[in-house]
Length: 248
Ligand code: ADE
Image (cartoon, rainbow, N blue to C red; front, side):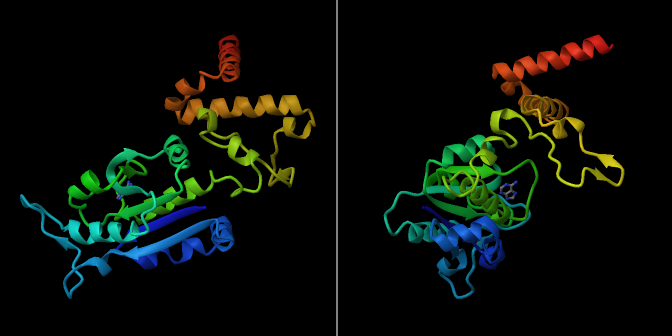
């Protein structure tokens, strides 16, 4: 069972994402528990203030530490072991490796920042890690928390019906996924690659790996160095390079 306690000043943001698909099914089965906690409920003034001006000056507002830390303490009141994660654009980059690392945990407190950021004492003293989901700036950590939940949930045993779909997909083995096709065989004049109709399983496997390598080399050359550590992948890369040499 996975428990995600989400701390946000926009709790309604999380209404629909859990009402569909695999996440909905897992919640109904009780294998995932989602608890959305409104940080404003932990503000100690009647205006439910959660932000203030930054020390040292500058534009924008900063989320105050007291309501967030009170909300974290409330979420931890059952004394279970939680990984506390703050989402912000200055966090360590979240990737499939990080998802795998966290898939060994079962309880999470996910803190969503807003405004220009939050008082640094929160990530420094009350969180295990500060994570960013990519090199772009969102208005807050809510979308990042959803990304995190979905990627961890998919790694939970039994979440995906078909285990192979986790093994074969993008970023496993540091390769992007090969292209997939379904019926019709010809769509508006565009044919499905012939090898996929051949019934030759070995050839299909090889073609798929070749496609993965080619797409990764074109779109994500940074991944290829790690992918080359797999001997099979390396032999495909060498064969492609040799073919390119001979074609020159
Ligand atoms: N909040 C704003 N931008 C973010 C990002 N890129 N990742 C995580 N949280 C964020």
